[in-house]
Image (cartoon, rainbow, N blue to C red; front, side):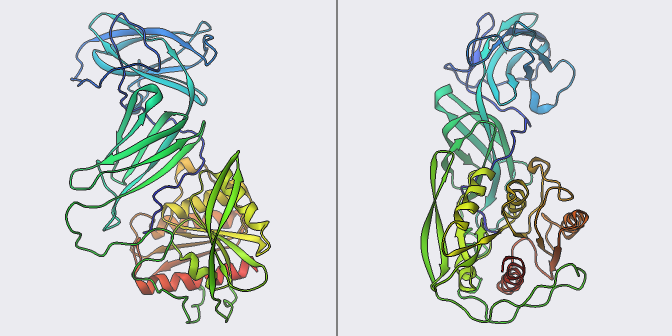
Length: 453
C-alpha cells in the first residue's frame, strides 16, 4: 500500500483512552495541567487512596459536569470515574496506590495530570481544562508495508512540559486522544527500526491523522514501495494504453463508458488553498492542453501524473481536515482548467478517508475507494450519508480490507440508492503487482469518466 506520511483529517474527538504524562503531583499537593516532573515506574497496586480536587474552565470558574477519571484507557469500571458538582469539586475513591493518571474532560476541553496515591491517604489535584484535540494514525514497516505492533509513539507538549506516550496495536494503530491545541513534535520508536519524528498541529475538537513508515535497521528482503502520491516502483511510468476491462457482471448498477482514446502530455504546478485563515499548497498535475478537465483529488494510491495523462485536472497533497478537504475541492472547481465535477480517491487509509471526505463535505461527484475500510471513528453511514457514486476495489487476498468487508460497504451504499461498483482484484492482496495496478488504474479511469464527464 502507499501511505502519506503527513495527512490529517477532521473527525470529532473520540475519547478512546489516556496516555502517560510527564507530570507528577505528590500527596498533599495540588497540581494543574502544567508542571515539571518525570514519569515514575508504577507497581501493581494492592492498596487504595483518594484523589480530590476542583476542575476549572479556561476562565478560572468552577466547571460542572466534567468527567474525572483514572486509568480510563482500561475501561470505565465502577470507581474509575466521577463527575464534578456545581462547585467543580470531585472525589475519586478507591484509587490504587502508586502513580495514577487523572484526567478531566468536558466537550473539547480536557487536562491530565499524574498523582502519587498513598494507602488510606488523599491527594489533591486541581485542574484547569484547556482546548484539546487528538492525534491518531498508523505505523508501518516501510519495506514490507506490514503494520507494526508495539511501536512507541510519543508527543512532546512543550507548553505543558509533558510527554504523552502510547503503543500501536496489532493493526499498527495508535491514538493519543487529549493533546493541547498547537504544534508539537511527535516521534515513534521500535526496536529493529530507525526512529522517526515530525511536527503535528492539533486543532480543537479534531484528530490529526499521522502515518509513519519505519525503515528497518537491517536490509529489507523485499522490494520497498514508493512514496504515496506516485505509483509503486512496479507500476507503469506511463498511462496504460490497453483498453480497460469491463465492469464485473456482479455489479450491474454501473456501466462505465470507455476512457478517452487520446493521451495527453502533462504539466505540473501548485494550487494554493485558503482555509480557516491558513494557506495550504498542493501539487497539481494537468493535461498540457487548452480547456477544462474533470478534477480528481488524490490522497494516495493512483498516480496523479498518469491520471492527468488521461485527461483529468489532478490535485494531490495533505488535507488536514474534512473542512480543508472541502475547501480544496471548491478551489479546484474555481480553476479555469477544472470543471465543476471533482472525484476523490485513496488507497488503504486513504480509501476510507476518501469516503469520509465525500460523505461529510457533500462536494465530491464520485469516489474510487481502494482497499479502505470505514471505522466507527469515521462517523459515516453509507446507507444515509453518501451523496455520490462509489467504486469499491480491494484485493482477493486482502486481509486488512477483506472482500467480505468491502462487499458489506457496497451493499450498504446500494441501500442509499446511489450507484455503486465493486471489484475484487484476482490474486492480489492489500498491495498490488504491476499488472494489478494497471488493472485498477484502467477501471478507475473508466469510472471517473462515467461520473465526472
